[in-house]
Length: 296
Image 1 (cartoon, helix red, strand yellow):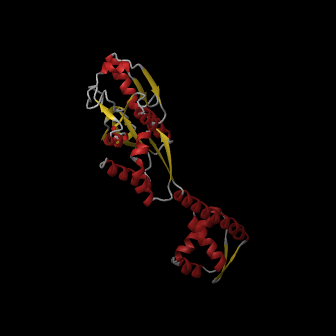
Image 2: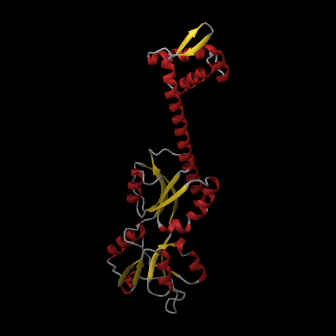
Image 3: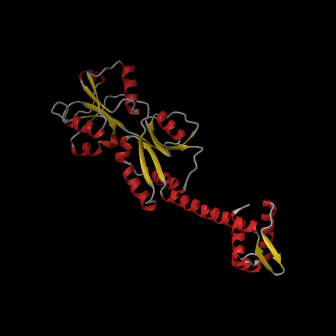
């Protein structure tokens, strides 16, 4: 039994004419007869009395008519619900704060012009492991992974760019015109850093430990903007993606330092689970992101 058979049955129960039913549904009359016969065989009852050229509903046909109306109403309700689901689609994106603040706004602006009804949710993703877990559990649809490269067989990953990470300080009379900065000088400095677990902070700490360098003090912040303001106030130095301090470097409120430290490259990739059903709006978001990142 399928919806088409029930629709045919209901139309025939109203017209009481297989010929008229065929005309209304744009079927051959033999198709109408075959559908009704198949329905009767499946249910094990006679639905119509054939009295010459006339047909009438049997008692079983009248009972089926009530259920068929309910089933068609439910079918319509289901289709409307599915349509509403599509119209109220949600895109769950994972990324570090730096990506959310400095790169994603222009991507989202372009995306929402084409998909204004898609609701967007952001979740913090600081490392490859966090992204992998959230994508695998379905808590994210797509993630921007900013980290050293790690194997993730279950993820589809596309390289966007290699990040530039730099040390910055407030310009002072003591360091004016100088960019070279000895690693040993970090032992006399306060480091203002992002939260523990951040991928590029992790790599910095590993490198400093290998070099045997221990900053005088390390202060942790939840906000990159707070770090920048404190560095500009002369409270310490920081290690940040260059993209977040470009304006400050240009206007001279921050100064880049070169400690001649060799760090493992940090990349930003866009990733999603290989088994993920790629809906049209998600495919568009990925394409827009790939194109926009070429301009950064």
